[in-house]
Length: 451
Image 1 (cartoon, rainbow, N blue to C red):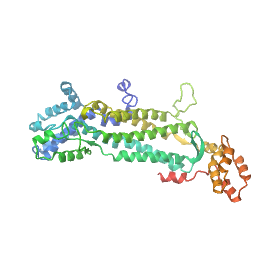
Image 2: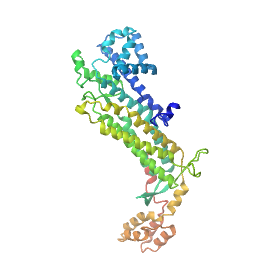
Image 3: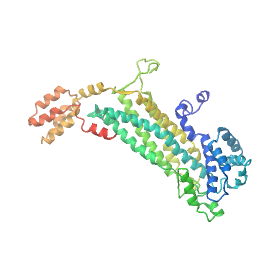
Image 4: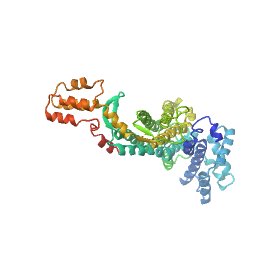
């Protein structure tokens, strides 16, 4: 707790418990451990390809144990080595040399980091981290929101409510249909995020396999790199320099950012529904809504989500500005920016968690939805004038405009108006069937189809 209280960043302070799962993927420890694991995997792959001598069972067990059980103490040793080298990847190589020095792997020293540039390792580690964080943390959190919204759609597909355009009473819809729009949008983005395949590189200092090919011209190094990266669950970018073009990663960030924007839209609408009393917030006995106004129950979870989604998307926007631009395609001003990925996803996760919590406290106030509709019979004007148009009444729109524009209409006034129309009785029958409760079109069907 002491460390959290003194944290500069709320992601590691106030929200540390919520964001803890992301440390496994984006912390400094995770980055160091990832580099060690990739370097070890590369040595094993060189052996499997016959470039390095065969490794014994005992040696493979040693390497796998070092990779799988890489510890915080190991990372501290690496950091101490980095103080000397002032180079993070070289510190990993020196760490592995120290570990190998006491084993039969001593003769494999020359093969550590063979033919690579640091960014081969760093970019691969970060591509794997982006994928694993997505699968283990981000998508499960998003899925909980999608499931909660789907429950609202299912339960309220046929619950009529007043819809607004320009903030003004417009036409009736159903609460489930309004939620269905968000559900459909989020499901689309979720699919894009889930199917994204991250790319990396394994092609040396300038992306041409220069060093590797100089040492072993007979080896198909492109095929080797593709196979090696595929084994790590990422794909090889075939045309790169010291860095990969970040377009592939940026497409993923755009997908997450759009999902966040959809949820920001959702959070603002939920805030408005709560403000309009369309939604009630469950009261928790010992919670306080104000230091001075004891009656208040505030939509703080949706407000928290809105703020954190904005912060996350500000970082994603910076990535879109910064990462495609690199002097001569190989400056490393991107390195410090890439270290902030955990912060962007941290704010995203805080927002997702807040939305989950907010949804868990919301209950649709059906009586308020009904009373609001009953107070606005003018919202059937669209249907009424369309029925009259179909009956070849040329003044249909103007007649309804005179009756309703800028006015509140009640049920009695509407029925009196219908009775006074000089139209066939069959047309009047259609008009009489209109009501704010029933004039919802195919809202229920559309809502249910979104499920």
